[in-house]
Amino acid sequence: MSDHGTLAEPVAVKDAGLDHRRPSVSLFDERRPGRKGVLLPPLDVPAADPVALYGARHRPEVRGEVEASEVDVVRHFTRLSRLNFAIDTALYSLGSCTMKHNPRLNEETARLAGFNDTHPYAPEHLSQGNLEVMWRLEEALKVLTGFARVTLQPSAGANGELASALMIRAAHAARGNPRKHILVPDSAHGTNPASAHFAGYEVVEIHSSPRGTVDLGELSAKLDSDVAALMVTVPNTLGVFEEEILEIARRVHAKGAYLYLDGANFNAFVGKVRPADMGVDVMHMNLHKTFSTPHGGGGPGAGPGGVVKELVPFLPVPTVERRGDRYVLDSDRPRSIGKMRSFYGNFGVLVRALTYILSYGRSISEVAENAVLNGNYLRKRLEPFYNLKYAAPSYHEVVFDDKRQAAVGIHNIDIAKRLMDYGFHPPTMSFPLIVPGALMIEPTETEPKEELDAFAEAMIAIAKECETRPDVVKSAPHTTPVTRLDEAALAREASKVGSFAPVLRAKIG
Image 1 (cartoon, helix red, strand yellow):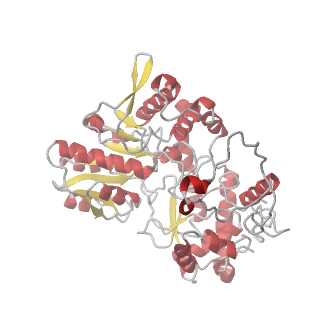
Image 2: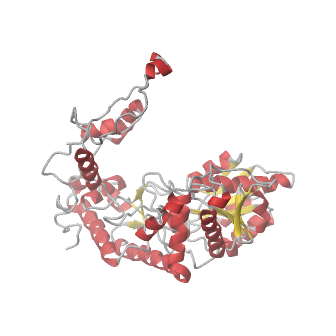
Image 3: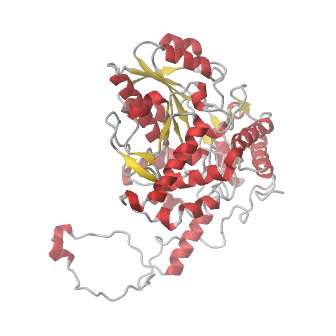
């Protein structure tokens, strides 16, 4: 028996981490007038009247305030945390998100006072350690990618995509023609075409071949003198490696265009192959994916961009430079695309990434080896029960769909909801859009065989339930504090109030 319960009785209440012995009452459900969580010292300055200072119309109003003791607050958040699915409690199967375990060493390092407490505007002579971390991280990323330089400034993957597209535009403009189009495969992350549009380009879609890779014939047909770049993901969002990447690069370069690589899936080949050796000109890297810092809930993130020598003049400012035994910020770069964000990057994530890289050292290729092994292990275990969309080898993520289960009226949303009863967060669904009913699963290198087996057994049990107990699957989840929602109605109601919270709170029993 695994920690996730038996197949016959998925997830006992205690195994799911849910406390059903008492109602899930939050601080906002019951008023506790008169309670105090902190005792403030007496005022040592004259009291100020907000009305006198700002006028009656500008008097601040606090709505939904709660009076609570420290015990109330601690128990409130502890109970909420036990309702969560988290990377530290079970395998997180979100495909294309690389939700890996974040070593505690990374957290301890990022929280060192010299890193955590330095003000972003601290002068260079007071932030030499911080600048050295950034310089050393760039050097490490240059070794792993083969690029001439790397900017650490972009604070997320999409921000790195935009920086890359802007540098491509600046390079073309410097030659007298910024060009009009960027080619994007239909398997790309949705942020790729969005970033291209933000950079001022029109997007032309490239369809995938039956194998799930870029269709070379269509690529050649659409490559012309107006194309500024091709944006590809390797391995792509279908979990398939672009085996013709060298030929793709040759054809793109022959037309004077650039090859951009979305590095969201760098986890699948880090330390094994350098992107620059594949003919890539510019690439953003999701440090929070490949080099730890799980990014659930929208952050934090970091999306540094590596470039070949030709694009170095256009890097965002400032860059971190080593001059003798000192580190400086260089903003004297007249051809730069400018700043991509305030300050100099998401520094805490940069510290974690460097810590992660140094921890592995020359063994960092084990990350890719084990991630790909885990992905293919789950593929082989689940292939008899779920439809595999593409027969090509899988690289760290595998895409199934609900074709077999749809024959009995069950879809990927039902399977995902039922998986929650077994104690696992659902996989990525309905993405990429070219795979209807997608179930996109990515087990990272940090998952042991026991956890992979527990997840596989849960998925196999659900596949069998689809045949023998379909109503149980269609009505799932059954053990969570919030059961099946009318998601369309929820979205409509949430749009009225600007938040899901009031609607969800009404559903919690």
